[in-house]
Length: 392
Image (cartoon, rainbow, N blue to C red; front, top):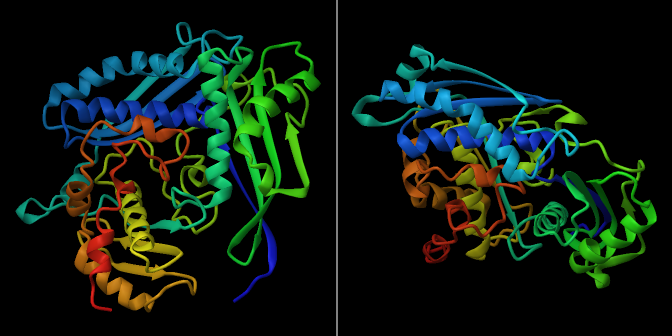
């Protein structure tokens, strides 16, 4: 087995990062549609810049007036997302009360709708594409350690900010974690970067001490820090201008943050703003569900699942299982077991994971995987026992 020592880095961003603002608004619009009509078709994109929010998309509803109802509410939905994140005014990054919100809703293409509506009430994939799911035994949540820790760092930043424990923190923040591996084993943490928006005119050395005491020390284990461990806090200097005032944001621009931090391939499709008939989202959730259950069943320490679809076709055009030499049975045997255990058509995925609910805004920050929220059905391991009973 290869035991070469190497470094691997992943990043995360806080809910106040402009790209994550856009993701959360898009998923809040999706939730608004699904709350009223679970079978609504939604493809929503959001752009934020300075004091501007633009919401656009394509939608299909059975109840025609619902389209107009959500369209009329979209601006206030966006404003409430900004408030919930913690933006209060232009000084913090954007003013939710006075910012300009443009709404450009359109109807879903008739040809796309016909193409994915199959005989007998089945659903064809909403687009072609390839999706990946991944699980490994590096963390209790079966996630790669670098992205798992990166998410925890920025999530704690938000908790300390919102609780008032560190009231000088502002919503925009990023983290980055570099981990040393020996082969596939976590051997140490080499460095951590925290860039966090703060109030004006704070002493940088004091900020570093407070961030170290309240965020780094509680979450970065001393025993895992390499001898040359390095911490950077706001390495470019004071980070006072943030949110949309500091940078633009766009739905779907943080897909590696949303998934596995680059530890496995990514199909390229974003998740936020898309209803579950879009396999970019739902099949990626199913692939994670499969990979996690295979690891819990004891068939691998590290498992990659790829699914691929053709638009308008229900069954996947391909399935791949890769265990990187950690599997206890051949990968092709696992593929057979998966096909007989899991529903892989869009309707099968939607039904087995109960995806037609307004659960998506909460997915749009701190990663879609490796979390214990009860609505994240793709994190269940309820098929592991069934898989373990196969005669292999």
